[in-house]
Amino acid sequence: MTRQCICQICTCGRHRCPHKPHNPVSKGPCVLSEYTNKYKSYPGNLMRDSFKPKEQMIQGTGTMADATTHRVDFVPRESVRPPIHQQEPYRKPSGGIDLLTSYTKDYPGRKAEAVKSFRGDHTRHVPSGEFRGNPTYADDFRKWDLPAKDQGKGYHTYVPPSASFDGLSTFARDFQPKKVDVRQSLRPAENTQRSDAPFEDRTSHKVSYIPHAVQARYVREQQPYQKSQHKFDGLTTFQRDFMNKNAARPDNFKPDATPMKSDLPFEDNTTFKSDYKKWDCKPMQSHVPDSYQKPAGDMDLYTTNRLAYQPHQIRPASARRPVSQGRKSDAPFDDRTNYTSDFRKWESMPERRGDPSQRPYEKPEIPFAGTTNYRAQYIPKHAAPAKSMGPDRTARQSSDPFDDRTFYKLDFTAKEAVPCPAVNLPASGFNFTQLDQRGHELWVKNAWSGETERVIKTPQQQISIEQATYA
Image (tube, rainbow, N blue to C red; front, top):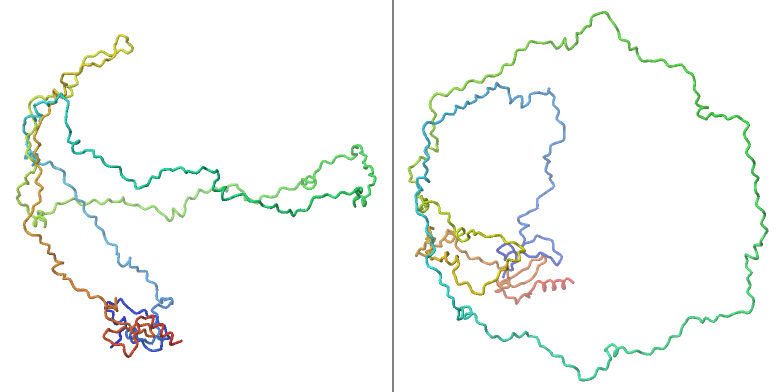
C-alpha cells in the first residue's frame, strides 16, 4: 500500500500539513513538496544594469534658437468679424384665435334642478315609558363568581411564647462581664525625698561675674553757632567747569542761493520735444458691418424627426369623468338656513343688576310637555347611499396553472458536490501511519494490513516515540 500525505489526498486545495519538523532535518530535496520542482535555483550573481540616466549636464555647441512652439504653430492671421443676424420686426398674425378647447367641447354648461334633501319625512317616535328588560351587554357579559387567586405565599400567624420573658438579650447572654485582675503599673513611685539642709543657690554666674560700679555717661558740650567770616561763593561745579567762551562764528559752506541772471532769452528746447515730435494722425475708422442679405432659395425644413415621425390622425381620448347633471338654476337663491330659522332675534330688555324688584329664576316643577324646535324641524330621513363611480378593482383571475419556469431552472442544473476526503480522514477510510522528519503526516487506506509494521493511531504518539528513540 502506498502512503499518501494530506497534501496529496486533498482535492480542494485548502488542506496542507502543518510542516512542523520535530527532528533534525536531513539535507536533501523534499519529495512531497512542489516548490523544488516549480521554482528551481538560478545563478543570481549577474546584476542587472540600471536604467536610470547618468547625472551629466548636456551642453549644446550651436547657437540657441529663439523659435518656440508658440511662434511656429500660432501664426498671426487676418480675422474677419462674423456677420450679425438682424431679427425681423414682429408682425401680428391675421385672423382670430380659436379658443375652443377639448374641455369646453366635452363639458358644456347645462341647467339642472336643485339637489333634493336626503332627509326623510317621518318623525322619530320616542317612547315615554320606562324601559324594562335586560340589554344585550348585560346578557353577553355576565359577572361570574370566581374564587380568589392563590398567591402562593404561606401566611404564618404570630403565636406568642408560653414562657415569661427573662429580660436578657442575646448580647447580654453571650457577652457576660468577666473579672480581670488589675495589672501592676510599671511607673516609678512618686515619693519625693525632702532634705533638711539649706538650698545652695551659688551658681557659676554669681561666682565668675563680679558686679562693678557703673561710671557716669560722658556728655559732650554743645558749642553755640558762629557765623562764617568768608563771603559765600554761589558758583556751582557746572558754572565753574563749563564757562561761556567768546568764539568766532564758523563760516557757512552752503552755496550761494542767489539766482543766476542772464539777458538771453530762455531756451525751452528739451530732449522730449526734440525726440518725441508731434505727428499728424488720422482719426480711427470704426468697422461698419455688412448689411444682412437674405440667402437665395428656400430653406429645407424637413428634418430627420419630421421624416421619421409623421403625424397620424388619432381620435381624442375619451374622458373617464362621469357626465355631470349641472347645478345651475334660474330660481332665486334661497338664503334661509337652519341657523337663521332656529336662532331668531328676540326683543329683550337688558337686565338691571341690583334691582330688588327683579325676582330670581325659579325652576318649574311641571315637566315640559311640548316639542322642541330641533325635534320638530330636524326629522331623520333615510336615503340610499350614493353609487360609486370608481372602476372595479377586482383582480383578474385565471384558471390556468401558474407557469413558474425560469431560465435559471432550465439552464442551470444542480450538480452533485463531492466533499474533500481530507476534511475527515478517519471517516474517509484512512489510518494514520507516521509523521516524517519534515512534518508531513502520512496516511494509508484501510485495506493496508499492519502486521509487518507497527501502526500508530495519532501524530502525537509518533512524535513521543521518535523523541524517545533520539534521547
